[in-house]
Length: 500
Image 1 (cartoon, rainbow, N blue to C red):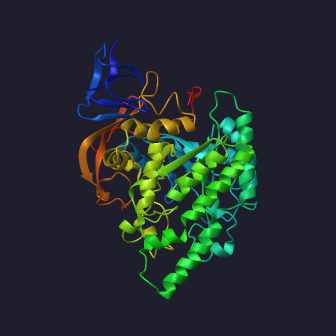
Image 2: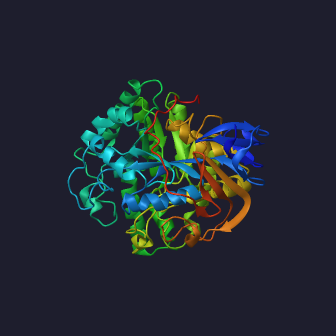
Image 3: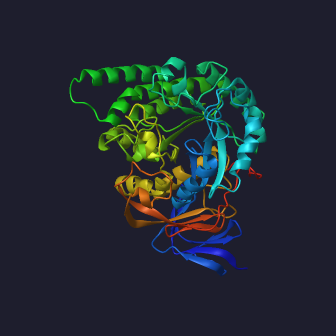
């Protein structure tokens, strides 16, 4: 029987298992055969000679619908995703100031059991890649809903923002926190509330069926007390004019010290160990953060602790950039921190590389570094940065890149056995890239609606030439192909988790 699509001639990158020149036969939406030479013809063939064939990227940290309505954001930003070889995006959704709650609404957000069906209906037909949602509990009702959200909607990621812990309305009103209207809560948003969420996550996992993916607590780990003190010290120093002034991004990094990141990670690990909840440290940005992750693992060997780093912390450094468009939380750090993160990817301290993609207009970066909004997009650059900075510059094996970008996030979020790997029976999600294709980042040539890029001017290799989503080409030779056909990954039965 003929295959619908064949991939031939390429070097296929198997996560954690090496690189081999084999052919891939696809029937319908799934991989039907992997062989040195396929035994049957195909209706269509992609000649991948001279190129690398990766599993489709599972980008487990994405933000959509924050700076624009989801109906506008999802189509353009998932064009950017598939142009970067991303075939699954897992989106963090936070009620309070988001696409389903008006910006000016001063009331508590409704429960997620009520909001999620509307969110999923709004998402239908808007995504070019497959997608799922994580959620952020911020109220008593949200915390109480966690077990049911895990059971009914198979939510695997519950996010807590440690840098909001104990921040007062007066501090938000200071003007240094443009996100002040994001968080509406009827409970002190503190470490006690974090423990409550962790206990509900542990409860969900105890009552889950064996085939259900485990729920995880995902933390943005920064100490608000050290941010407050650091900001006051940096502003006082700038006002005094003593010594050489740091660049805006360096000053912002100093205002949110790496010691605060370390403290947040250790606090979260202690609480997670007490509660018995799996923990993911999001966007570790510094050597201090990785040291804290290693220390926590040694102290709590029973704790399931995963660590994520982002494409921008792996590629950019505060001292190397002018202006402040690259403001992000946690901030960009020093070149030595960037090197430490790559070492963490290499030695296994880091499990996943993600984008933390949050497309934003340059107009929202106006003013100064303190009042500018944070965040920016980068999902199209995941593979080029990993190949250029990781493989070519530092010798990171290609199979390790595939593990951190695809297999590990799929395992963490219950998609292994379906996504994140190249094997017979899995979804035919593939990213084909040319390791020799060299291009300089130009915001006008990227597929995001964002009108700038902090990566502008960087020369990268390994750009994606073709992306296949469930057996169909959705991106080819710098053009998005066909209509949006992204599917909600929690909407179908998911096979049991593959062994770690």
